[in-house]
Image (cartoon, rainbow, N blue to C red; front, side):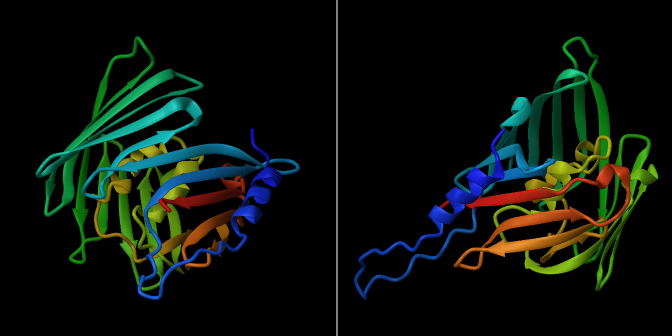
Length: 266
């Protein structure tokens, strides 16, 4: 596991000014907002330790083509049709071993209305098929989502934030808007889902479809979970490079501090 102290030393070196010669006629290159890697550190007794590392690639149309998670060797590969999308999510976990999830859906106005996922856990497990369905507000935001036969989510958007009410209620969450713009190559609001300790939250919230931008209008700003406090760090070009998510509630499943390190194509 990598220690934070080593990473901070690298950050300090990277922050040193670079002098390069260029003519007056050359226009300054616009900094990239294409996120190609996210490192996630989790709090430990005396330091942060690297929990996972996500590497993201794009196709010729600037769509996410694959996501590779270093830990558990998770791999997500996307396929885009003229009016469809699918992804294959494969990896391992400590309880069931190998798992494979395959999601596919038709797109209407660029958004998923209904979709299905084949979920197979363990080498000898029988494949289970679950269905998703979505409805959207007149502004294009997700209004409700259903996963399988028992998990239902209602999204209540307001001028101050978002409330998600789920069945089962373990998925309930409340968010407020930050002043951090959410205009990068991927939806920043996927990041907290990567570390959510609640059972099956990644699958139930269909985070990888959200990552591909096919689940409704993206919030213009990063949403802050009411159970956490947030600190941000930006680079010289004003791009977000660090998010520190610190617990502010007493819920036992939400007591870890996480540090997201964001890397860009340049």
